[in-house]
Length: 489
Picture (tube, rainbow, N blue to C red):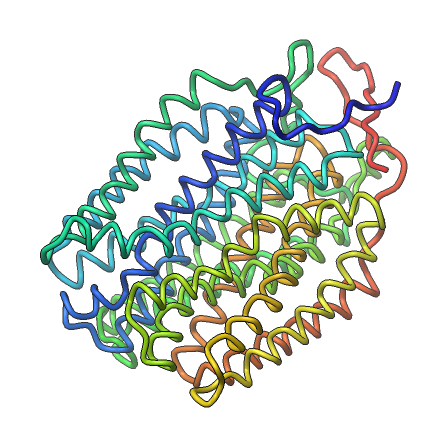
């Protein structure tokens, strides 16, 4: 029987779950990026230097790296309904802490902790994959990601004006606090409004918890290798906060962080071996196998798509303000165009993947992303503002097409591991954010855009040579031993 068409005007069944879930993601991003359009006010209030501002941007995306990994594991283990409700609840109070900060150190700490909010994306990926079939999954995940991702643009559009309406020196605090109140209220609404699966469906959980399952020796070593950049990104953050840069942390403390990160990596490496030691003893049954190489390629693709989005959304309002001498409200509105494109472009990337093929779509949009960032590298004060915005819109379209195309593939790798796979890909998005924002702290915006373009070109080649188009079915085994085949074509 053909699957009923996806009607977005409906608020029942799977479409109801889609709408409730993208709005939860929207609020998590609204909270996560409520600082970006207010950077100019924060700069004046706390007398921040340029390096402190850039450090604040890096701090905002740093904690999301381990948070997405951990949340991905928890989603697979306890379900999306509980996890999303808990994330919004905790994020609300972290938001209040940021709004009440009185010193640069407290501001920086709360911004770092608010990176936890960015892990919300992972949760909905698993929930949507439980409710939608493969033929609609790309567009459904695209709508979830695109409409939810609009939270960052909504922050840029509304918060400067909201701060002005509240008025006074503390207007920005009330604006930020308002986003926390919204998250707090919706955490309750979400908990009582959704279920993890349709009635009668099985929620597949990992056979073991604490690390992702792999199914071959080669995949085991590739998994260990792919974990390194996530710890390295946190090491870069510690170095950035050390005496050689912003001097927020002492040399001894930074060295301690390096040691802790190394120990954590070794502990995780041991845990990965404990979970997967069977691959060294015998061959994994065909029915349980999947290719971790697919996960690694998707990680890199999300690093340059969503990672560059994170970096650009964080710096674009201030870039427009300084380049074209605009007001904070105008710069926020223009900067919001980059994030606004996600409303249509991210679902568009998923839809194209469903219709034209997932690998083909990803290759094409990565090529467009290379050209888009090259175009943005040419923007300077001599450009008309309208032309600069047009270049931004063109680049943003390909970026969001790319994020939609990546997550049109993620849920089709291995169902019971979808949360962990989405968590790792999402974490790599934040690795990209940290990497690109660190580059920005040392170079001009023009060079910053060129670095992203070069990274996208490398990823394009990796995808073209190593990504495999999902075909046929993936198998999952029910608790009673019954095999369920899940269509992925």
